[in-house]
Every structure is written in structure tokens, then in C-alpha cells.
Image (cartoon, rainbow, N blue to C red; front, side, top):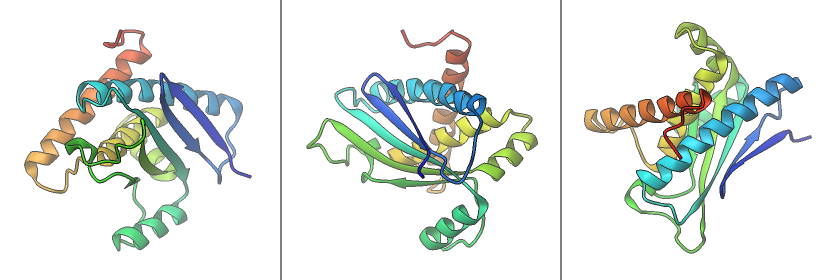
Length: 181
């Protein structure tokens, strides 16, 4: 049985899948709150930075286990290792305007986040699980939009700055101090 949360902000949508996990209601509520803040911030990023306010966006986020992310990483990147997040964009490069324009909704693609790596990295960076989860979501979202830190140092800096900006906006949103009115 597929387990899914659907989070909507305006016309924008995140589908969150957690098929191999059994989360209690409090954990699911925390995911839903976190994803709501994420969606609000990336919606405004889409409008303000990418200049795509005419479009709604749809992103799929899957929390998966070590074996599944290792399989995906091996199949798609020829790296037979466990990793934290993988991004599979459905559009060419939204950042430079290369996407399907015939519908008002942009299917950005899929993000896979490894639960155990997220837990480890949260401890390593002295963050809560959901803070690290959101950071990985933001990182993956930027990849879906066409940003790539592995391309060169300039691109790495650009992506890093946008990550900081979006994560900061999420934190402000959680405190009720959202920069978005």
C-alpha cells in the first residue's frame, strides 16, 4: 500500500511518499508542517528568482532506505554507494527556460532522500532530523531547477547562496517571520 502526503500552497504541490516506513501521526504531522514551509519558500523562489509565476509546480519527494537509494545511485549515476539525496528532473533546465510550456503546471521531478543518511547528517551537523531533511529537499529542488554545484566553482557558489536563502526563509516562516506577504 502506497503511503502519501499531499501538501499544497497556492497552486503548487508536493507529493510526499514514505512507502517503506511506518510513521506515527506526530511524525507525519511534523513532515506535513516542514513540507508546508518548504513549499511556501520554493513557491516564492519560483516566482521571484525563476520568474515563473504563471506556472504552478509539482514535486515528488520520496523517503527511502539505504538499499533503494544505493540501487538508484548505481543505476543512474554508476556510483554503487549510499547517498543522501538524488534528484531526477523531468524538465530540461527550468533555470534557463528549457521546459515544457504547453501546460500551466510544471512537473519538476522526483527527489529521493535516504532516511538513515539524513539522520546521520542531522547528528553530524547538530540539526534536528527535519532541519536536515529540509536542507536536502532544498538542495534537490535546486538540482530539479537546473542548478549543479558539480559543474564548476561559480555554479557551486550560486547554488550554495540559493540554498542558504531558501533555508533561511523556511526558518523565518517557521517562526512566523516569513519574508513573504
